[in-house]
Length: 113
Length: 113
Image 1 (cartoon, chains in turn brown, blue):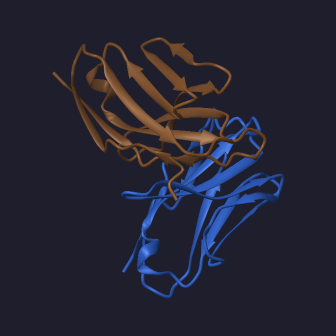
Image 2 (tube, helix red, strand yellow):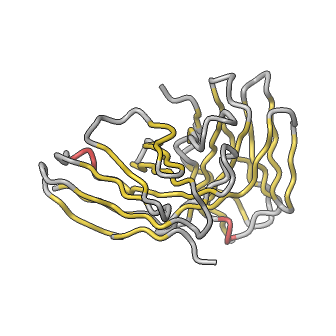
């Protein structure tokens, strides 16, 4: 049972344009959501997060939007840069339940020149 | 500040053997968690240790086990290896409990032949 889903395995965007990565979840107990970025041969690195009491969190070029009623979140990258090419994982957690993250299967973003 | 260190980085085993993977967390981090990454499955939670105690366990068979030492270093062991155990095993440490903001190592890539 995949509680966190990333239905797009890959996405290609031109440099300078907006990249939008989507994530859906099914467990209404999740109350904190994170995005991780992973380059080949490296471990995932934390990118940005959002609490369920918010609907938007922004950090530079990265913005995460949360729609609780739809159980949907998205990551916007504006403007996209070639260095953003990586696999992006959406993750969810029930705060207070240790560090047990439930991850999606990832979306490979390729930013082309 | 040194990052999370995992050893070995790559290893090849045959079915039926056992393997032990090691993880040294970031200095001062007392929480260590382990994840398995396979193609199409994303990252799946194995277990988490805090102060030498297992705090949470994922849905993996008993062949997967782990432990944490007093210096917060952790090991995970997989016994009676199966072909399906071939994966990237990622260790992560955290200084803040339950926030989901983890620092990952580069992983140990296990191939079972």
